[in-house]
Structures are given as C-alpha cells and as structure tokens.
Image (tube, rainbow over all chains, first blue to last red; front, side):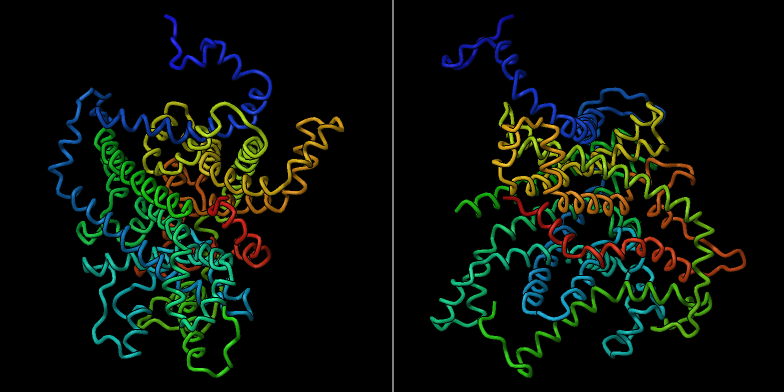
Amino acid sequence: MRLVPNQPSRSVPFSGRLADALSGANAVAYCLVLPAILLRLGFTLAPAIQTFWLSFTDKSLMASGRFVGLANYAAMLSDKTLIASLGFTIFYTAASVAAETGLGLLIALLLMRQVRAKWISNFIMLLPWVMAPLLAATVWKIMFYEDGGILNQILRDAGIIASPIRWLSDANTARFSVILVTVWKNVSWVALIFMAALAALPKDVYEAAEVDGTNAVQRFRYITVPMLRPTIFLVLMFRGMGEVQTFEQIGGLTRGGPGTATQNLAYYAYQRFFQELRYGYGSAINVLLLLLTALIGGFFAWRMYKASSR
Amino acid sequence: MAAHPLPLVHPQRILLVALLIIVLLFLAFPVYFMLVTSLKTPGEAYRLPATLFPHQPTLQAYPFVIKAWSYWRTLANTVLVAGLASFGATLLGGIAAYGFSRMNFTGKSLLYAAVVGSMAIPAMVTLGPIFLAYKNLRLLDTHLGLILVFMAEGIPVAFLTLFSYFKAIPKELDEAAAIDGCSLVNIFLRIIMPIALPGVAVTFLLLFIAGWNEFLFAFTLTITPSTRLLTVRLFEIPVRADANTIPYDLIAAGGMLILLPLVPILLRVQKQLVEGILAGAVKE
C-alpha cells in the first residue's frame, strides 16, 4: 500500500519525510525530549487507554474479563450511590474552588499591603501548602471531635454556638467540613498565584484612575478584576482539576460517610476497584472521572487562552 | 499598590490588619493545635474539653510513635523514593525543557500538548492499570515501582518550571559556546545548568515535597510495612496496649514527625520556593 500525500505541495513520500524527521537536528532534539515524554505518557496515557478498555469488560479478580460492551455504563445509570457521588463531586468541586478563589484573592490583596515581617506570613501560608492532604485531614479530624473537641469548645466559649456542631456525623455539616479542609489546604497556593499576578499589574493605570477620583472598590471592580482574568481562569483550571479528583480528604475525614453523604467519584471508584475488585465497573467510573477532569481543564484552558489573547 | 501609605491608626487600616490576623490564625491554628496536642500527656490529650496549652508538656508521645511506626526506616524509605524520583524527574524534565527551549523539530507543538494534556489525567484513572501491570511485572511492593510512578508524576512540573527558567537564558550564550567548539552536552552541563542552578534546585525541592506527601500510589502499590512511606503510616494509628481511647497525642506526634523535616526547607528557601511555584504555574 502506498500512502498518497494529501497536499500536492508536499510531494515527498511518507518514508522520505520520516527519514527527514529523524535526521540531523530532529534526531538530537528527539533524544532530548522523548525520554521524559515517553515515561510520562507510559504512566498516564497508556493506563488511561487501558482504563477505557477495561470499562468495556467484566474483568474482576476472579473473571479474566469478557467484552461486555456498554453493560458497565448501563449499570452506572441505575447505581443510585454513583449518581449521588457524581452530584457531590460537582458540588464539592464548585464550592471549594469558588471559596479558594475568593478567599485566595482576598488574602493576596491583604498581603500585598503588608511590608513588615513578610517571612512570617509567608511561612504561615506555606504550612498548609507543604502538608500532605491526608495530614491536613488528620489534623482537622482531631479538631473536629464533637463532644468537647477544640473547635466546638472555642465556638462555645465565644458564645457562637449553644450545642456542639456535628462536624462529621451530620450529612450536610460533613459536606461542609470536607470542603473547609480542602479550602484550608489549597487556598495558600491560590493566594501566592494572585500575589504574583497583582504585583505584575501596571501601576500607572491605578495612579491615573486615582487622579480621576475613583475609589478603591471601583478600581478593584473595573481595573483589577478585568486584568486578572487570565490568572483567575488559570486558578480555576488547576484547582478545578485538583478538587474533582479529591481522595485523601474523603478517606481521612469521613470515608464517604455519614451514609454516602460525602462519597465522591474518586473514592467510589477506588472502593469498586480495590475493595470489591470489580476492575471493569471501577474503570467505567474512572472514565467518567477522566471526562469530567478533562472537561474542566479544557474549558478553563480555553477561557484562559481567550482572556489572555484579547 | 497604595500610592501613599495610610496613617498608623486609621479605621480602614485597623480593619485590614484585623482581617489579615484572622486569615493567618485560620491558616496557622490547625498546625499549632497539632503541635500542642503532640506535647500533651495521654490523659490530657483525651480529656475533654480540649485544652489550648499543654499543662505538663511532655515529649513522651514521640518515642512511642517512632518505635510503633519504625520511623527511621520509614523516613529512609521516603527520602530514598522521593529523592531518587525527584532527581530523575528533574534530570529528564530538564533535558526535555532544554530541547524545547532551544530547538525546533517536527511535532514540537504536538509533544508539548501531550505533556501538558497528560496533566488532565487523574491519578485515580491511572492507578488501576498501573497496579495490575505492576502485579504482572513483580514491581508491586518495590521502591523501584514507586520511584518510576513518582518520576512520571513529577515530569510535567519539572518540565514547565525549567522551561520557564531556560527560556530566560539568552540563546546567544549557547551559540557562542557552539562556535567555540563546545559540544551539546558540555553546553548543557557547563553553561546552562550553572546559570539555571537555582531553578533546578527549587524544582528538585518542589518535587521532593510532592513525593514526600504522595499518598494514593504509595498506599496502593506497597504492602509490607518495610517498604511503606511516611504518609501511609498516618493510616495506621498507633495504639497503646492498655488503653481503649483514641490516642490524640500519638496521632498528633505522628503528624509532627511528617511535617517537621520539611520545616527547615520552608524557613531557609522560602522565597525561592514561592518563585518555583509561580514558574511552574504561570507560563509565558
């Protein structure tokens, strides 16, 4: 079989172009870039493709895996816990990312004005960032203890609450608590990114606006936010892709409970795959997780691209 | 941003300082509480209501956790795995970043998109197939297996961070050296690396911290206690033989033992770390 070139201008046969691609400068460049790329793709793209394949089989620890078409996906439609965990994943991701972005921008604006003892605030900011997500969950779990735990104790002493908050044993409160820990863990990174973006904004625009008699709120609304748009989309992209696949906070704090209130896709997929050893069904859930992550990443990457090329 | 600083006692300034203190308290308090809980006696750690200061500070929880976790062995495992993986990822990612910053080749934008796009594949999606493959390849429960996974995890960060550092180094430097008869390897090792060394060191540290904190792969791909890493130990609460209460002091001491080795890094190279975080995320 002979490959017919599509464009008449490129009349070099395919084999010729391949040889061309492998000659001289190209060959040197490939030697530099391919080891890293092949290792990376071997541990991400290849397993992802296998996940797709597994999702069409009934492979488990016992069964070697028969092709079952879309049976796993059909089963997902009637799996009430799965639907609920998809719902919680979306809610959790949206809520934590919104809180991280808002609070991170606030922290960045506050720290921009601070001039003295910057290393202390930087050190405090980096503490949650440097901690493993599971360590963050462990620390908060100690504080969440309900009867006389430190958080309830402080809130009661301050007169804010009369009866103890059931941080992890009430469905709605547990959802809030998991989000709280995630925001605590990741808000520093967001604040650091915003601080760098704020420092890079042109100062003369602010001076001109000040001369024109605008107030700080107007300058924030009409200068800072529009100019920060690419950075905001960058933060939404990275944090969105990060939060949608959260595993440690769920495992460390609630194990999906109470009931299935804080069950999310990643945790649910892990349980199906590694506890029930249903590789096919677990993989089908992972395909859903992959699509969701790629959707979030792709959407905000596109918005970021549009915002920064304007 | 403020063109003229506000006077010291100004209502707006007081409000801002108060807000700042609240935010910093929110960020620091959990770590503070972990520290004081780790210094409490078993009785006080469990006593309710919880106390904000240890009444009789004691270090006795630490030796207990160090023994129960085989801490030094686990620490050595973690340093070995995270260290070698970060070194490998920094090296491979750096070489690739150098190629991308200096050369044009067929399929360049496609390969760039492949590296960046692979960041959208969740770890959970790759975990299952990697586990099954490792079972066949006898890489399960080995440090080599973990090092390979951690390396692959670190490559995009190393690549993007070092790409932004290398792009800032003028190409004329390489060209002048090439005219003087310097080979590509020599240019990379003797001209580019020394200039980019701060960036390379920070990249290594960022990856080391990420490897130190990794849990999902470390938990799933190891079985025996002697291969396990520090974060995985957090899942195994040490228990005192004679007690049936939750040993908060031991849990907190374990947390401190995972956090403490990283604190000197935060204090010594704080500014550089922040620069590294930004170089990896904010491209162009």
